[in-house]
Image (cartoon, rainbow, N blue to C red; front, top):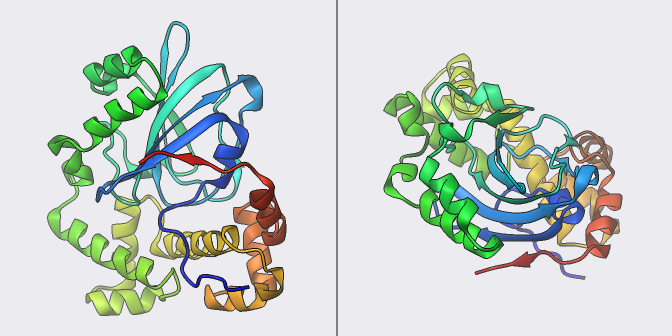
Length: 280
């Protein structure tokens, strides 16, 4: 078979669509927001595993009489993602480092954690409009319009991070993404003209994790993307090396920790699962 050498664009959360009902997503051409999605959770069984991706998710869960608003950042290892309860959900995934955060919340608060927000911490008009929307597609339309507004487009720059820090972080982040997470932190710092200690402090301020952790998650996401669109297990060693792992055993160890299962098992799970429905 011929396998693509490029991983699918964007962060992957493969277990979400496999666990909940009526999952649909829409990818956006936005520098801050990667996608919006909608689904239905059905009781305590709706608890997919989240995997590390460096992103922040904002989700609104609509019950019979209330709206649950949650925000969570990247997990550090594969872990449960609580979408329990009988609710209709709509949410968005911000690109790494670009989340619009409520006042008083910093990126470190969201790492490996989901926090419940008071609806008043969000735009009350947005919550009302989402609640009144007749179906999932309409909720996605409402959220998309809000996310693409001028105010939201300011992104994290409105959260007290200086322009120089933002410029440095975005430059280094672009280098990490371009390298597939294989560039060394020392090389990145040298190219940017800063010390490794300062670069780490910048990433902790913007992401809540170090550049080394972020690079690790980028490398893992690339490998997961390649695995998800391939079916040739015989090429696992070559894939491991192409993604920056020392060997196949290193790749398997990373997947056991970050995906919660071996690469081959994940490949079979995705191959046998239903296809995700995407809207344009």
